[in-house]
Image 1 (tube, one colour):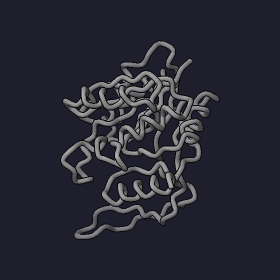
Image 2 (tube, one colour):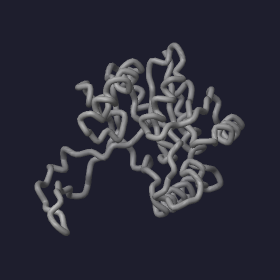
Image 3 (spheres, one colour):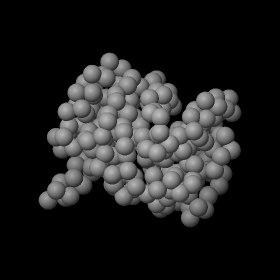
Length: 238
């Protein structure tokens, strides 16, 4: 019984405004994908790693990860797909016999703490087929619909029941395979906004459980996020 982590790093990162894929953007001397891979490997609960690379960059990422002394678990790099779902499916196809737990993590969350990774894997191994980390929503959230040149507020959800979801998300291997084979098609057919793998599991009608997330696992989307991540690392290493 082993745990495979799929690290999605094939996105363009267009919102970051750089001329290279987001996963290769530098953060305090190392690309985001290397930070994320190191932290997954350091968790002690990940046995192997598959990284999905942007088109034409499999060799670059292979050299980057294979030569890193901090990553002491087997690493494979494969071409990502045109969508996040396709990239995860490509990584899932490389699962080894015995990989009964699969984590899916975004390279855009480079500072994920080890205890968060451990918490997700532990929850899957305790019997929950799909587990996501999340943080309470602190802002008031409004539901809206288009209304001319503005938007009309149609409701105010109870924020005490809302969570902002992070990665890594953890799954029983067979459930994730089934979700990608049947849930993805169903999500598209029903026009569901399946922006994560948990959404595909939900589309199957299967339960998804949540564990506590961590503020350090924030996502790099803008230059401000990158600045904040740099500050966090500088304070950590001070």
